[in-house]
Length: 330
Image (cartoon, rainbow, N blue to C red):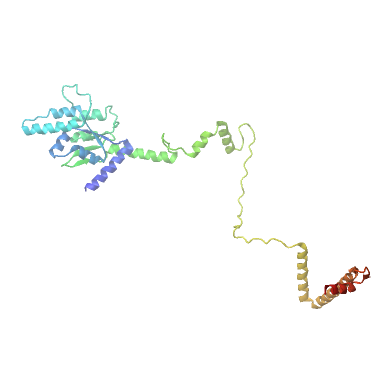
């Protein structure tokens, strides 16, 4: 049960921090009655307050409340010792000047705390006070002020009351306002927040350039009555195949003469299949032509043989010269 209650108190203080601006150290206003109740149950008041609020605290007491402790009746020695203990605990807290010390008699706890928490009667806890009061009437009055966490002691247990209905309504209204503002417009950045890229670009553009851009967006006409050239929109068509998956084309390295020879051979193969007698005639004609060409070449070589001179100076035919050359070599 303690863990569950602690979790609820932590969540409740987070809500107070988000909606009403509470932060550590929490300013806790204590009255005379809660000091007396904590001493009766032998409780360490500061430790229990810090544990319930889940953070550092700054205990504070008004001048009227500490005067109530001094004015408490004490007839026996035990009552005097208890009274001294109450005053010692009150002295450890910071003195909160309420401005009632000049009065002959101190104000009641309700009047004094109300004047400190809500001095102008606006119904708001502007200084973010946490009120630790044992008097039920005081707590009931403080529930009418928005954003006041209330604490009291119940059978040696420190209790943090749930958020009052008025505070809950204000918190819900604030949350709805934040949600609505976030949906309608952009969230305003604080002094340490980051600006968006669009805002930075808009600030860098001069006024005239911004007006030209706006005019182009509206009708395509510039400010100085100069027609603005509309940007050509790219026509999106069907995408081609992936170039990595397409088969590469073969380069034509063949020369035109070799290509012509291949075409002729291919044509001859087709004719040989369809008309074999024509092919035989062509082959015979080619052989005859080749024979004639070979005979002419032999005759040309014979004619080209030159006469060589022998040592004696007489000119002989090529055959004789060859025989003499062979004899010499031998």
